[in-house]
Each structure stands twice: as structure tokens, then as C-alpha cells.
Length: 265
Image (cartoon, rainbow, N blue to C red; front, top):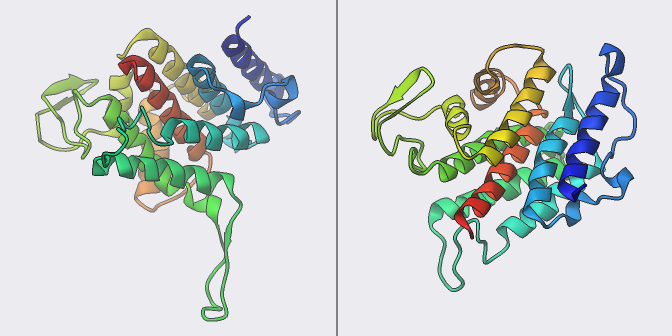
């Protein structure tokens, strides 16, 4: 069995074990580290992509219970570093040349999300401003996670969507039609579009979306539900849920690594 296949199997077995009997029973929090696989040391593309899927499945379980373990905390910063460190193939970076602004922003978004979710920083009152409330850094991560995901999807789907979110050409996806340059392409439609990409990416995306359907216990299209139940309330300031972060971040890393593989960078 390949290391990538082992990662997928370990994560599936973990999800199955904690949901036995219809409830949620938390056992070992680190199915990969416990098996001698350090997610932060993964370098092969197929292993990283397998971990993106598996750590989404282990990071959120039925009832929207969130489990952020050392598997996740090891994986995110180290894999992000290898993806984005200069000269980054993913960002199209050439030594000695300045990156376009949208690529600089994308690098900042990745690191902002990773730093917020992996560090237990507290923003506390100071002597100068003693009345300020205490805010945990992880609570801020959801507000940045969806802009990250949308930028990663737009980068991958550049034939259809500009980086500002406007249609790059006229097309139809699902029930919606878009005309070149008019309106903004919705996150749910970006997720539908990217599921039409080559089979390896289709498979990985569908495994993540199928897990979300299982978590929610709903039959609705998970692409629509992810936007309706998570993205929109977060971006409109109505609510915030930390469980959106491992999903959005792992989806972003997954699509980014598929793009590097697709483009032969």
C-alpha cells in the first residue's frame, strides 16, 4: 500500500470509529501521528493531497463537532511553507521579479489563516485600553478562510473567472448563467465548476463534500450548503464557526497542489 493510500485509509477508519453507534466518541486525536506518519513532513504531492482530504474528514465530525489535533497543527504550517516559500512554483514566482499584487495577497491570505488557526494567541486589554474584550486569534480565522478559498478557486479556474470574481467569459454552471464581465461568480458555482475538472481532483473534492453532507445530515448539494450555511453568514457578519476553517484551508491547499501538478510547475 502506498503512503497516500495509507493516509486515506487511516483517516477513514478514524472517522468510522468515532461515529460507531450513531454518536461521536473521541478516541486518539492523531490517527496519522499515532501510526508513525508526521503530516508536517509530507512532501510528495499525492500524499499531501490525501492528507488534505483525510484531515478534513478527521477535523469535523457529525453535529459539527470540531477536532483540531496535532495532525492538523503539524500539517498546515509546514505544507503551506513548502507551497509558498520563494520562489513559489504555485504563485509563478521568478527570482528577482516582483510578484503581481494578487499573488502577494494570496500568499498573505494563506499565512494569515494558518497563523490564526495554529496559534493560541490572545488579544488582551492593555494598560492604555483596559476596557478592550479578550479575543482569541482562532476566533478570527473564519473571516479570512473564505476569501482565501475563493481566491484559490479563482486562480485555478482562471479560464472562467477573473481574480476579482467577475466572469472571464460567458458560461453556464448549475442553474446559473454568467456573461463576461457582468456580476460576480458565486462560491457555490466555483465549487460546481471545479468538480468538472480532471478525475483526481474530482475524486478528492467529492470525498470532502460527501463528508460535509454526512456532518450536516442533509441531502442538499454540499456546494450550495457550504456557501449558504457557512460562507454567507460569516462574510455578512451574522455568525462565525471555527469548523469552517479546516474545511476551507484544506480545500485551498488541495486545489493549490492539484494546480501545481496540473500546470507541471
